[in-house]
Length: 228
Image (cartoon, rainbow, N blue to C red; front, side, top):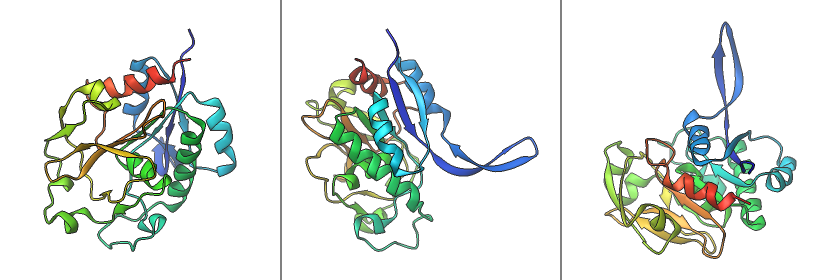
């Protein structure tokens, strides 16, 4: 049986090899390795012309919206907080359109960290532009592990159970859920840690990084949903 092609979104960054420094489409290798372990064939997707999106959607069996720089609040109608890192609006536009097209086409999709935010915005949702100001603490921006609660009836809950310890620094979070999305995991302060689109073959966003470490169950579930 051939392996399903799983797209992984990338971003442009200056990279060095030998004496050369050039802009490159960058992806942390953990994503590709996790897809490979799960039985998929990873395909890197650079944020180029939106004209290529239909081809990606037709050719890919599944899609990972990867993490990275937080979204530009202008993409969901909010003012940018000066404490947020410089956004990548070109990447925001490309990935939002790609996510929307993948959802409409029924392509299995996993949004990771920033990717969860992209999925939410693509479906008409909004984000909290600077989370510490909304929750009056900075625990979400720290790298300390914390336990989250997961709905056992969700695809994520069926894969990993009702509680999981995660470590995922983030300074934005879901504010208004996108159309059709359900919150399926929460931190102890009720900040949404995962979302899911009911009725879709596999459309999930998680605030943490399931591609890191030894627990590959969520990426396994994505690849399983992408199997022909």
